Structure formats: C-alpha cells, structure tokens
Length: 507
Image 1 (cartoon, rainbow, N blue to C red):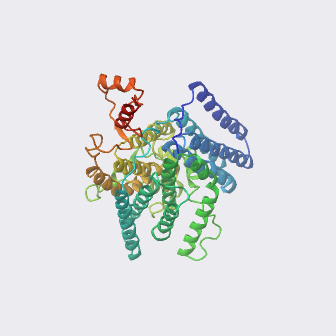
Image 2: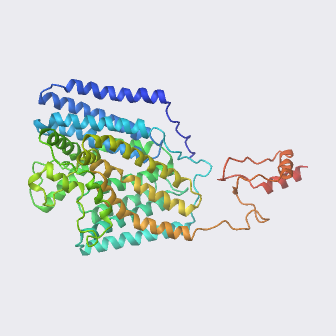
C-alpha cells in the first residue's frame, strides 16, 4: 500500500479557533452546573464526560495520521478515563462528591485542550515514502521469532512453577510482553504480511496465551498496552486509519470484557466477592480519586508531597540496602488522603496524572504538569519519527518495536502517573534492548559486487552525491537521466547500466 501523504499541521488561526471552541463548550457546561443541586451536578458531569470523550477521540484520530503516536494514545486514554469515567461517576458516585467531580473533569478537560493545541498540534514527520520497508532476511525474522518464542515459553513455565517475589513476577511479565511484541513485529513488519492471514491468527493466539497463563488478573492496563503495541505495528505496516477507527469502535466491548474479567478474578479469590461490584471500579477510579483530593484540599487541607513521590521512579533501580529511606509510590501515598483507614496496609489508589501533580504541588502543579507532560510526550513522538528513519533493516525493526512499546504504555501515565508507567515499561525493555544490541552488532552490509559489473540488481542505494558531469550529461542526452530523490534514500529504481546498454542498442 502506498504511503499516505504527510498530514499538514493546521494553521495557527484555525487551531486557535478550534481550541477556543472546545474551551467554550466546557465553560458553557460549567456555567450550567454552577449553583446546581447534586442531581443537577450529575447531569452536568455526564455532559462534561461526553465532552471529554469527544475531545479525546478528536486527539486520537487527529494526531499522527494512521499511526498510533504517543499524543494520540494519550488522547485515547483520556477519552476513557475522563470521558467514560466522567459518565460512570455521574451515575454511580455519591452526591457529596459531585461538585468536586465537576471541578476535576473540567480541569482535566482544560489540560487536554492545552496539551493538544499548545504542544502536540505539530506532529512528527513519520512518513518516509522512498524508504518504506527495508525487508529483513527470512533468517533474521526466524531468529527474532525463535527468540521471542523461547522467552515466552520460559515465562509460562516459570509462572506455572510459582514465583514468590513480586519483582520477579513483574520482570517475568515484562519479558513475556516483550517476547509477544518481538514475534508480532517480525511477522507484521514484512512486505509479504497481510491483515487477514495465519500470521494474524497466530498473533491473536499469543495474546490469549499471555492473558490466560501469564497475566495475574490485576493490572489490566498491561493487556491494554499489549493491544496498543500490536495495533501500532499493524498501523505502521498497512498505513490505514481503520486501525484507529476500529479501536474507538471496540472501546465499549473491551470495557465490558475487562469488567467480566475482573469480576471473575475477584470471585476466584473469594466466592461471592463480586456482588454489588461493576468490575470497573479501579479502571474508572482516576477522576474519582482526583475529585476526592480536591475535596480534601479545599475542606481541611493536607500536606503536599513537594515532588517526593517522583523519587520513587529512580528508587525502582536502586536497592533498599543502598537507599534505605526510599519514598513510596504515589498510589500508596494517596491512601493517606483518599482512604486514611487503609493507609499503610498495602492499599494503592489511582488519581490520574493530574492527581499526581496536584498531590505534589497543589494547583500550580497542574500548570507544571501541562508543560512537563507536553514536552515529554512530544519527545516520544519525535523518537518514533527517528526510529522510522533508520536505514538498517533489522536495527530499524527492533528500534521501531522498542519505541512502540514505550509509547503504548502512555495510558499508565494518564491512569496513575509516573511510577506505574516507569515500573511497567522498564520491565519490558531488557529483552528489546538486548536484541537491539545484537542486531546492531551483526547487521548485514550490501555486497560489494552490487553495481560493479555483476548482475543488475532490482534496486540500488542513492548516496545523494553528484555523478561526474560528463556521465550525467551523457545519460541526459540519451534520455536516461535517472530520477534522484533528495537526501540519502533507498529507492526502487532501474539499474543505470541496463538503461545505457539499451540506449546503445537503439542507436
């Protein structure tokens, strides 16, 4: 399939007008909610939830073209946690929290508008049509599939044998995640791949194995991240927006499956534990916990963390023997405000990335969050562009896969903040980085015989250097001046030698 033309960034005036339109819609809803009763706030929160969902889908479909870029995945996660989550809490949360729920949803809505139109409006230059796919050799793909299969099988056997340590469980799950991703990349990022094929059936089977035998029932966003990873690979290969549209259409069915999956897991722990539960309590928790933080801060106040929870990220790789007083992750610290009776019991909460920055710095932290998250996600977007411009076949494949894995974990940031994202992503990277080092050290080079009197190859590498003047003039006079794209590109063009001999014969 031909590469789609690169998306043009919207003009500044039109983008500003659209941003003002989104903000005006939120302000209008907020004005209706002002001074309302609890029942009125429920209607207002439901309307704001719909606005959040529409805005998130707008970001998801509008950024990156057919690709699942980091900003677009952030927008999709926002549409679920603040869009569907806002409607969920408008229907089921207590009356006392509805005014603060309205405030939490409006703050999230305004932050998403500022992020998209202020930082992510100009997308990275992903498309590189002259390069397209540099096909790996069948042997390289076989090695990648075999390595992934061995790691996945070892993880299944190890999990079946029982893993006591929580850290080993996290590393095992991360290695299995990377193994499934490597196999999928080797099979999908191939010019011969097709959407409806045995390869797709095989990849779906791998996901089923991952969910059935490796996923423990908690941390359903791990499955979501795996789904985003595989979907991103298909979008890169087949260059169609249908992948994004399909994900939007499947949102509600997937949420329904996630609810049933959680209720089944809860019942497996204790029969009858799923009574009076929806199965989406933790998935839809972020706006609720953020609203409780706002309520507690405005009513009686609480001590801000002043950035201490962010130090739990470097603590992930530093042993406690070296750093005895390591700070706790955000989820455990939130219980001090949202569930004081359960604080210190191992209970963990999730308040979204907005709640993380508010818990640390108060309302100024929300502005700081927009700046930091805006530049960070934009950097991830550019990292994807850099990976897609690599010219070495196997290195490019593994590098693109690694960046896709890093971007697919963005919903963890939206749901719970930095620590959850860092812990899960770091566990997935060792296998991918090891493969990247191996393929970089063993990358193949173009045989020197190509273009030096041997058989005419079907393609040649254009170095971007000018040919001798006499040679170019000779070719031009015979009507065989080869087309030369700008820059250093690998293009499918006829070999110049065959054109010259053909011209001799005609003369």
